[in-house]
Each structure stands twice: as structure tokens, then as C-alpha cells.
Image (cartoon, rainbow, N blue to C red; front, side, top):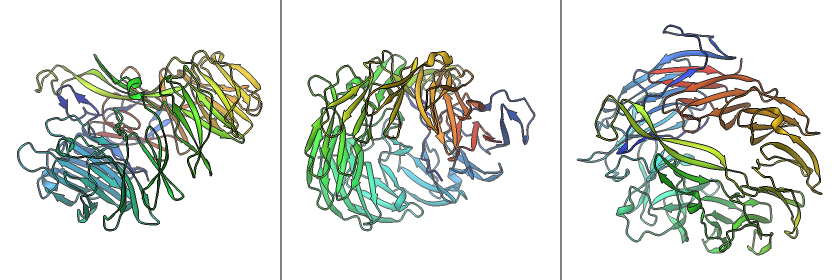
Amino acid sequence: MKKLLTTLGCVLILCGATPATAQFGKLMDKAKTGGGSSVGKKAGSFSTVWESEFENKASRLALCNGDGQYIIGTDDNSASVIDEGGKAIWNGDYKKLTTNKTNNSEYQYTIWKDKGGYLFLFDARKLGTDRVAVLDLATGKELWNSESYQNLIPKGTKAEEGTDQGELETVKYIDELDSFLISQKESIILVKANTGEKIWETNRFKGGVGKYIYNAEKNEIIMVNFKPTALGALFSGFKNQLVRINAANGDILWDATFVGTIEKELVTRRAIIDLWIKNDKIFMYLDGINVYNYDNGQKLWSANYENDMQGANGGLFSGGKRSKIYRTLAEPLFTDNAVYLVMLGTRDRTKYIEKHDLESGKLLWASEKITGAFCMPNIYKAGDKIMVQVGGKVQVQEFRLEEASGGFSAGMGALGGGSVKQWVPYIYWDYKAQKNSVLCLDDKTGTTAWRSEKFDKRITDLILDGEKTVFVGDGDEFYSYDIPSGKQLFDVKHNDARVGKATDVIDFDDKVVVLSEKGLAAYNKKDGTRAYASEKIKGVDYFYHIGDNYFLRDQKNSKNIIYGINMANGETKGSVQSKGKGGSPKYGNGIDITSDGEYIFAFKGKKVEKIKVNN
């Protein structure tokens, strides 16, 4: 069962954040029918399992849990939950469901667990004490409430700058412990999620939890902090900390400081940092890599660079768009005894690969320096070769200023009948003009074994077939190379498939499916012959592999359409279109999908529709 944490507030109005507008979902080409249950209706080959309604209008949250057993819809002041058959389980106003009268909850998120989960409510009061309450998602009963925790939300603004996968920067859910870590001015506190009981408190760690790893064998937490927006003005003497904590009693076994600033992604608000435990070492990935002894926190070695990508990302706050770029550098590639890193040249802004001994950190080799590559997003190991993708797609996260009818006036700060402007979030992949190619390095020496010709327009990710062959597209053509020798095995004109330029590649059995701007084309690995080309689907910008199901998304031109695709033959199973706000951030406005990909939920205000993907 998936654990989904989400807040609504992705739609930000100029003068602050307001609830997302009503979510809207409908089946494309669906026949118009009257009210009530409507089993077996068709949309392409999709069918509607049932239609139901929340008791309230779902303007804040509209989500399902992993298996679709529970579906929740909330607004600022109430919640409604229905079951997998479309029947109401519970509903109510927060001020009646909570004993401390938590009510105007502009910040809400769900945590799905077996047999339900939690609905976390924050009532930030301008005058008086902030209120927190946690409800049981299965029953609607209040599990606990508190007025002890203050400054959890940024003061003086309604902008949800502090969310991290739905959580506030000051509240982190620790799934393995079924507990919340709550950041306060002088300490952090661990409380049981189902009772609110304080387990422990420590004043030796301050700030929000940027990343953590739970070590089940030792019942310990390794985590790093950052300065959260909500508490930023309250901290004095803040320092970057990496700590090892006894999860049972909160004892700090050691803490280490580190250099660098943990940034948050523009839309998702995820901390841009990674942690791994390998053998007796902790690897922290932040502008390079820092390695610490697990037992005592001593820094063993590092390989760092000066990250200019925040500048390159743009942070464009011009006119009607705010945008930043991510996923420009490959994550570290670990083997049993080595780690491979994509590095940035400090002065000449080149990019290159370094291989380090995992134990000592010794530099074993550095590859040739690559100029003219904006990104180097993937590296792969294939036998005695290291395959490097030079160039490729990058992730764009942006807010666009768009008009919507009715609601809260951005200019006047009051309700009005006309159109208003809202900041609407988008996440998609895009290509930047650069020098693209496939680079193959000798694993023993780091010298260049071979390099493909430069691809003029773009380069897809690489698909490796064992240690023998690699497949890649350049937008208009599709190639295969022999990995040991670099010999080109075939060159197929992808533009003949008439599905637009290649944007991504998917490894599917004996085929490589090339996701393109207007559909799909599949090629047989053995000889490059085309297996199929799909019907045209305009504006594809994302794909999902969920369970055994594949989906394409068209999010362009202020719309959000999810297509179900049969990857064996390229046929479209059906499609769902949303024109509203809300739904799961993962899938876009008004849409959520079960973790096995078998069911789609579409939301429109009070209405809920359950859609079956496969017949």
C-alpha cells in the first residue's frame, strides 16, 4: 500500500495561498447520463465502476489510498471519506470532530497506512494558540490534539513554502516508527502518531529534518537538518548537522557538521540531498559526496564541487512564470568497492567522471573533461565499461500565473465574481540545446574507449541490454551501439513513425518503446525494425509505469489528460481528463491512481468516479 503525503496549496494566489479550486475529473468521450450509480459505461475501453459523492465539496484534498479502499475529500473545515464501493464511511466538520475545536485548517495532509491512516490538521491562528489535531482516516475519530506546538507554519504569509512531500518543514513523519518528529525553537520532539504521546525530546538537534535513514537493526536514525522557513527567524547559532540518534530514547550518539546549503525544490519542496548507509559508512550527497564513519561520525573523505546549478536553474521569476531546473547530474553510481561521480569543473564549467575507492576515497581516475554539456544525467556500468549519457532531458518545476473564474481576488484580497490569477504548479521534462553524445569509458583507466557522433538536437536516456548493446534516440533517429567496440549496429529513422520527436525510452521485454511528443513507437532490439507506432496523442510530457500498467500524460495548455497504454501493441486503452485543481500531485489535477495502476479516481467537487483500466 502506498504511503501518500500531500497538502493542497499548490495553487498560490498572488497575495498568498488559498485552497485549491474545486477539482474536476471526467472521462473523455463519456456519454452524458443522469445522476446516481452508472456501472459499466465505456470511455474507449475504460469503464466506470461507480460514481459517488462526498458529503462536502472536495476543494482541499481529493485522494485515494494505495489499494483504493479509502477515498478522502476535504475542504478547509470538513472531511468526507467513502469506501472502495463508493459508499460513505464518515464525514463531519473539524470543529465537531476535534475536542480542541481545530477548524480552519489551511494545512492538511494524509498518511496512508494499513487499515486507514492519519489526517493531520493545522489550525494556525493569528490571535491565540495554534492548534493541531490528528484524525483516524478509517473512522473520523480524533486520535489526539495539541496546542503545545507553535510556529509550525510560517507567520505572516499563506504561501505554502514549507511543504515537503506534503509535510511541513517542521513536522516529519517517520514511517518505520509510526511517529512524528516535530521541530520547535529549542529542540525536536518525537511523538507517537496514533496517540500524540511524547516519546523523547532533544535540544542537541535543531531545525527541520531534511533527510533521514532509519537503521532497523540498531533502532537508530541518521538525519540531517536544514533551517526551515517557519522557524528561520527564531534560530540563533544554527548549524548544519548530521546526527546519529538512538530512536528509543533520543540520545545523540554523535553529531557532525557539514558545509553547504540544503536547497528545496521549487514545487515539490523536497530537500535536495541524499543519504546512504553502506557497510560501516554514511554517504551524504550534497554538491558532491561526503563520507562519514558510522560508529563515531568522523569525516573520512569527500569529493566536492562548487555547484552553480542554482544559477543555471534560473530561478526565473519573470512575468507570469517562476521556473527552476533539476536532475542535471547523475546520482552516484556505487559498486562493491568503488563509487563513480559526475563532477563540475570549478573554473571552466566542464563536466567529467571521477572514480573513487569506496573505502579510502582515493581518486582512481578522472575522465576527459566534457565541454558544452548542460547536463550529464545518467551513468551506467556495463562489464568493464562505464556508459555516460552526455546531454539529455532535465526536470522543470515551475509555477505559471493563470486565470480562473470566481473565488478569491488576487488584486483586492476579497471575494469577487470575475476571473482571478493563480499560481499553478507544473512539473515536466524538457530538453536544453547542448552537445549530446554517448560516451564509453574504460573502467580500469577512465580513458575514453569510444564516443558516438554528436547528436544535433537531443539525446534520450540510454537502454542497456546487458553488457552487449546500448539503445538511444536523438529525437529524429533511433540507434544501437555495440558496447565493447562502439560499432553502430543500426540507425533507424524515427521520424518515419510520425509520432514526433523522441522524448524518452522505455525498456519493454524484447523491444525499446520510444516515447515521443505525439505518441509511441516501438523497435525490436535484435535489428531495430519497428514493431508498431501508436495513434497520435498530442502534447505528451510524462509517462508512468504503475504495477503492470503504463500511462502517458498530456499536461500542456492548462489541461491534464491521463492515457492508459498497452505497451505490447501501442493501443490506447482509454483516457481520463481533468480540468480542475487538486488530486494527487504525482498525477496532476483532479486525478489519483491506485498503486497497482488498475484503477483511476477522477474528482469534481463533491463527485467521485472510479474507473477501471483493464477489462
